[in-house]
Amino acid sequence: MNLCFLSATELVALMRSGQVSAREVMHAHLAQIAQHNPAVNAVVTLVADRALAEADAADAATAEGRSLGPLHGLPVAHKDLVDTAGIRTTRGSRFYRDHVPTADAPIVQRLRAAGAITIGKTNTPEFGAGSQTFNEVFGATRNPYALDRTCGGSSGGAAVALACGMVPIADGSDTGGSLRNPAAFCNIVGFRPSPGVVPNDTTTWSPLSVSGPMARTVADTALMLSAMAGPHSHHPLSLDLDPAQFAQSLARDMAGARIAWWGDLGGIPVEPEIRRVINAQRAVFESMGCTVDDAEPDFTGVDDAFLTLRHLSFHTNYKALVAQRPEWVKAPVQWEVAEAERLSSADVARASARQSLMFQQAATFFERFDYFVLPVTQVEPFDITVPYRTEINGIPMPTYVDWMRSTWYVSFMACPAISVPAGFTTDGLPVGLQIVGRPRGDLAVLQLAHAYEHATQHGARRPALVHG
Image (cartoon, rainbow, N blue to C red):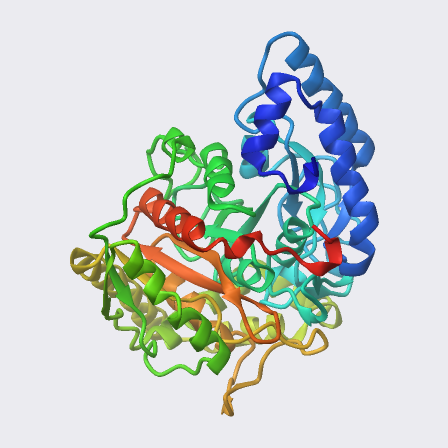
């Protein structure tokens, strides 16, 4: 029994029944990290002694007939953007190289309250900026399916740790695709919940940035979500929902589900191999009894509006750091701050109006359809030495985020979206399929993703690196 590649659901059942101890599970994952992390650089801070002590406490609870919660004894790694009390949190920045928070972020509090045990922190780009995981503190994280390729980002360390069996669950965050992009590049599952389902680490009215779960299966992702989700009094967009809904069986007959199939997303370029792999999946949905029609939302004007609102967020968070030590801040973050300072109030008003209109358009779109299906990424995992793609199919990408519009167009819809393994390119590189649901239809998205996963089993293929 390879504990490192059992599902989170299986591990919890084994630990609760006493068939396997939490210490055994923790030891196995620590050994997996020791063996494979040097090659990929996914886990950047490890708290092994603390994790083993908490595993012993979980075993003591089991001996007393107590369960610590739905995530009882599960090792979890937290993205290095997320505050963890007593554990270094660098945000991939030299400013925070030695920063040790005194309090846990809300999602960390909830995961620990559900019985999960923190094993360490996962790598991320500086301030989470960009879908290529590298920084000046820890260096780059490598794709386990091809060590010379990027793992995506910004939750890249989390995706690689999962793909390599270093943890069964990991948290991530997503503004323009930071959960979904690395999930697609690493053949695991990443779920972007509806805004307000999971409390953010910062209080904001913006629906663009969310936190969410990552795992190797859809069921494990939903189990983790059941611990992360729920109302929070300090978060303005927080939804009053019952998180237990995500812990129920995801099995559902998908016959009759109405699927809108992507076309060209307003004309953005997509590499031929991505298009080939994704479009081959249409037959899978049809075989499940779904009705599949060609249709997609109107993304006109989203490019300017999304970037405008993104610039404002970076300006709020990083202007002071750029002014203090510009040489410590990478060029894309400086660019975001500079762009924000060129914006007028009218620019911001137009972006906000387009955001409101997009929500209305999404609501209308999902009166006709139950789901929207499209690629997660426009490109295959690329050379790890390339900071970001500057062209696709010969078409220039002017900024460091233009090559990932297939994810941030969806972010702008304020709808739940999941990346689920969809197969591989002819070179053996993972491709992710993106399922989008109606606003606040998170459970329905997980149900279709679960059905698709079981119909295809693409996620069962592991990196040769780990000989799973």
